[in-house]
Amino acid sequence: MEVSNYLKEVLAESKFALLKKKNVVAVGIGFKKVKGKKTKRMSIVCSVTKKLPKHALEKKDLIPKLVGTVWTDVIETGEIKALKALTVRTRRHRPAPGGVSIGHEWITAGTLGCLVRKSGSVIKHILSNNHVLADSNNAPIDSAILPPGKYDGGESPRDRIATLTEFIPIQFLGGEGCSIGKAIAWLANLSAKLLKRKTRLKAYLADQPLNYVDAAIATPVKDEWVMDEILDIGKIAGVNREPSVGLPVKKSGRTTELTEGKIEQLGVISQEQYGDSKIAIFDDQIMTGKMCAGGDSGSAVLDEDNKLVGLLFAGSDECTIINPISYVFDLLDLTI
Image (tube, rainbow, N blue to C red):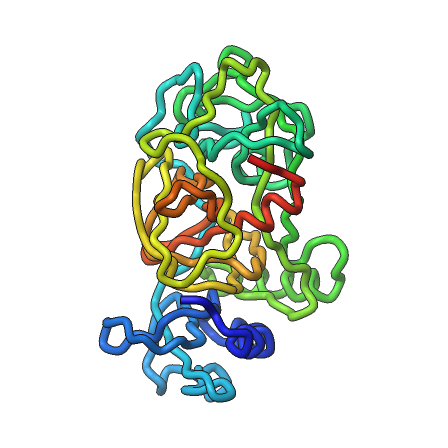
């Protein structure tokens, strides 16, 4: 179902205030659920780490029943994290298709998403996440990319299949360019440390830089070392830049292999954890149900017609977060 302009306007006006409430980790547009069953009513959906009774929350942290004239819903997703590696599809592939283990030589392992062209070039590039191919902004351009990833036995220079070409930097809370946000992030993390909490306290301001993609590309050393297909899916048939709520989607990833789901929410703003101390805010994202596990980051997400919908980069025990392919292609100037 397509999302109305009114719903989009209500989300835009309310998402920052809702995301600041206790336990809220994401806010988007989706169908309201009643007693676990999906209704036909579109709502503003707030994802929380854990559902708490009203008496356990301060008044300012309660989710209103209505935002404007739009109903709200609250679902429990747990913390949403950039996905790290577990196991499966870990052997050495030559040529390497989408859906197998890959990673920068400094990280554990993620997933090779698919092959794309840069600026209309005839040369095909590997597409995956920034945190998979560029170690979350840390890797230098032209450094080594290994399939399988290091966690799966990949070694440099023996398994070097490509070099890092370009990435969109991830803007973390408290990063350069926002001194107020940096101070608040520092204080929040210090408080969490003093209180001996495992997770860091939320440090969030509406004027923090927003992210739209966790994406990077790498250039193969030899064209014949990569395959323009995705394991268990096949060739990409095109690009779907306007997915809808309820759209069936699928992905082929390193850890959970071929999984299917449906788009549950659009226009999602969420905070993602990168390790113990880094948090980044991502806006206008896609959320599905559980489709992934650690190591699936970088998987290409497609619809039933094998058209690219997005790039998987984060998730929890209950949900999966996906960069819309329109942002990925526009920001990196890519085509199929």
